[in-house]
Length: 625
Image (cartoon, rainbow, N blue to C red; front, top):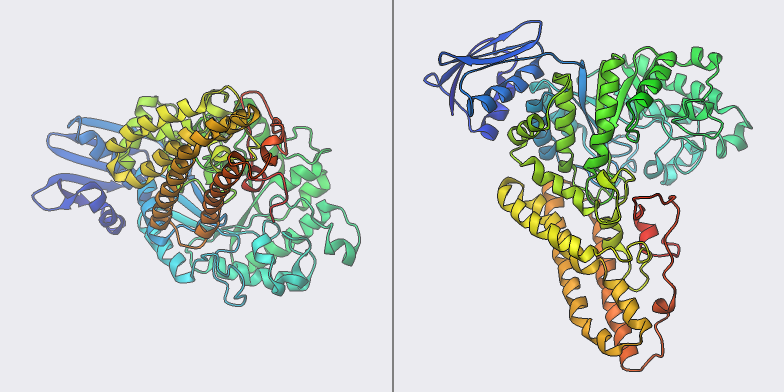
């Protein structure tokens, strides 16, 4: 399409050039005219009498307006749209610390998509995955970003009207950073810095300088969450026991002194204050008692209330009010549930987001963002977050909206079919799992990685016909792949995962049943199935590898490939052990002699769940270290 823009283009022209290829736009004087006006007030987008118009306030509103104009022009020709943003900040936080470090081109692609959605903020969460010149082991072999890479991303974002905010840790969640010998003197516990130590604050000053320097923003997220053992390691030996409220505030004050010196505006996760005020150490304890003396001594920071668990609007409203009692302008952080396992959990993400953002609007919260965590290896590709990012965007510009509106916007902003993306949830929303998977079960991860001979989750899936479920899902994903050719790598990956599980899901249970009946003939007949599933897993590994290297830096893939390698070599051993038994070389297979017990730990099982776990608890009952 040829377009001719006139009017206030000075601040948006460079960003506009970034989007031309994505939308097949050519700027030409003979093109359809769109007049652009920048002024305070709502976003206006219209087309009438052969002329278009976009009236916007913030730069980001122009790019959303452009997307709206194109979307409606293709279908309506005459339209007049008005949108008023409900939030001053709405964006995403991309995890680059849990194995996958998305490449610069990947960040740019994400920035273009969220710009057209109208999201104006992106944080990249880096525990140790950014370069700090003074500490060469900080982020060593972890795919850390260079200052130049971060600066390039930041400039690209600014041209699209998006503020990039550094997001780091300055107390806990630093296991990978503190594992090297350089950190011995600044380590309280394995993942927590030694508060009160001069060396710690020298270290943090270097970190804050390195993290903030590449960015134009003066805001910085300094973490401070989940420091569960604060003051109970080397700190206890060195300084004796002190109240953790006091340690927290004193440490935070030292960090804020550094950010003040650098003229930065810090924000922190709020959970430690609530945990310390709770009788059972819980974050979401409505009875948590935080002393007034502690509240009055909290340094000048902005609190971030993170919550991706509740689907009750009343709870969010109550907890927002508790945050306001500590600090007047809290930020809310929701979640996309890219960390459920190997597939996204859209049911949980949508239920929690709807409740949370309705509450935020009623409580007049101005700033919100959504977290894209990658727990336990970042097995779920981050691009699966896009439907939830779209949901956050539409909540910014509308008080309410229909599902059809959301689907149409997603189709335009991403080029993908919304319903086809929703199929990914069915990898975990299986028979035995409640609707929308609100209990966050992750059977696709459990069944992919679990050992065929040991089958820790075999009792959980008894009589559920999961092979049938995944066979039917594979067929759906094959058709979806044909409709989403621009997303072929993603759909190929999930199609192949479902293809693997259509055989592997119940293979261990079947072997156990045959063995219990001492049916050597049937066991012999399973050999082709074992060879077949081995081939399918290897094909899946290659599809995952192609997708990973298209999106992420190579560092971290070795972790995932070792997991695939474990599955493949263990299938070899299954075949070897069965051959021994069938030929009479051994009288029994000890692993198959064991009764299959219902898996019940370490997470408590709940109705509507088949289980949820991390890799090391799936593959063995032993100690994987």
